[in-house]
Length: 289
Image 1 (tube, rainbow, N blue to C red):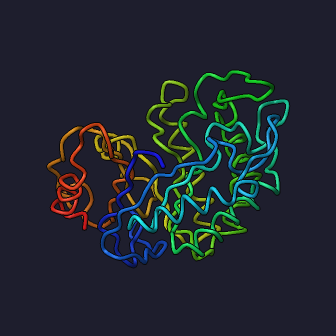
Image 2 (spheres, rainbow, N blue to C red):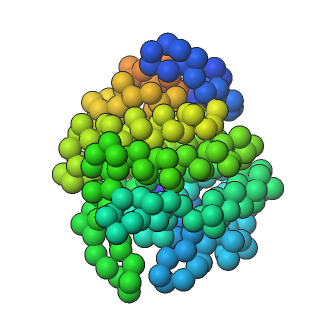
Image 3 (cartoon, rainbow, N blue to C red):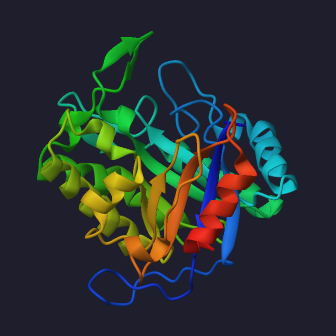
């Protein structure tokens, strides 16, 4: 497993969106510790690419091992990346715009959720990674990254959502193993590739699509607390989230960020001399539990 922790904190039932309208119910205990698995094969656990197929259906035993380890470690929540940098899924046309999603990719996600349910583990699927926006390169016939152009305008964003994202919650949106949906991992690292207004538009488009197909809450894996508070508090997210990689526990009160929505500490280090217990105590003491 990756040496990155996942803390789901201060998770309440019946959250509301920023506008005050009822939003997806969040039905969790007050405090969960989970794990970022966060993949078996980066960006090709779901679907096929020119390298061949080695998705979840071909590696179900390895997936079960990861899920059972998480459960045995007292971490019954996992965060798992889906599209990543786009190397296997979704599918793209010659114009670089998303053209669809392979049925195998959806089957893989459904299988992962079935396996997680059997293991007593909840899953937070992470749709896109910031690597989607990094300069592209060809590796043995597969384009890795370089997908900024696919979401640079409204038509491209609509194509991504309508042809590849919406089919996921349409199939598994009500699956009992889906805890929440994370629309983009650390989008702040991609703001040199796409402007802030375009990234905001993408986040809104993804969020709306997931809300339309699933009652599960929606979050975004902000790279740090400053980015969360500066960029995403007005987004229609049910769970706020930031990642924390400093060497010492933070001094933070959850209510100072947002008194009405739960806060997710989506990643924190588990190695490098970090006192994990002390960090978790700080998370709890800050009102996240």
